Image (cartoon, rainbow, N blue to C red):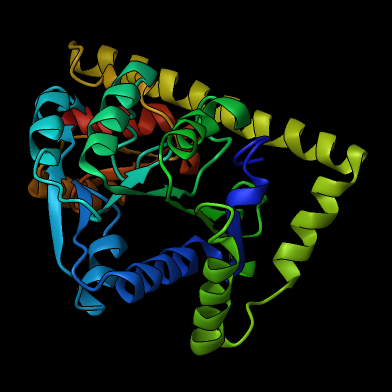
Length: 311
């Protein structure tokens, strides 16, 4: 589902407690293999990324990603910053549905990033938490597959907690791609890390996912339901962008319709977010990230009117 065909002889993997467990284990593996490796993260990124890196005491750096003015990708800044990557550094990349912004690289932009990182000898570290929520299961895996084909070593932290609707079961996997002759060594190291951290991961969620994927009828039902969820989020994005255009008489929020995944950062100030909470009973985190999946057709106009009133 993640890599398609052609990588089985290179892939070592372990089940983990959710995608977060996979991220933690990947960082542990990086630190064990190369204590000097720096971990590069997009600015902004999911707050737990830098939190775990700091906790592990690993060197870290940021690369520009999101342009707050255009609400799109700062590709020029990204490329300049990644010129500073050293051989062996790990570069954390969001495979799809960037969290917290919802702004994703296009495939030609991915090609540029991949070429630069390959020239630098970096180790790509892909966080793939929302496959199927953006442009579809296959399309959302496209960047990860490009990376897998372009680098000798790749780490992929993937989650089934969201796209299978089993969030509380904490269902994730860490995949480490290496050369076929090193695969057994990497698999041994992954098993060792699992043993040190939690002996064995919980199996209920992973067993549910396995049952669904291995049964043709269940898999078809799941894919149809996931597609319904994805299309609903796209519809909500378009509706919210249109309502905000009408309410504000501007195109300031048109980006919401073009972003993908569960989240978007609206570009409101902390004071405006506070006013939405105190005066309108509308809650979002202080950087104005909202969960698109938390909306419905009836609440979108309410949210748009409230945003228009605070700006």
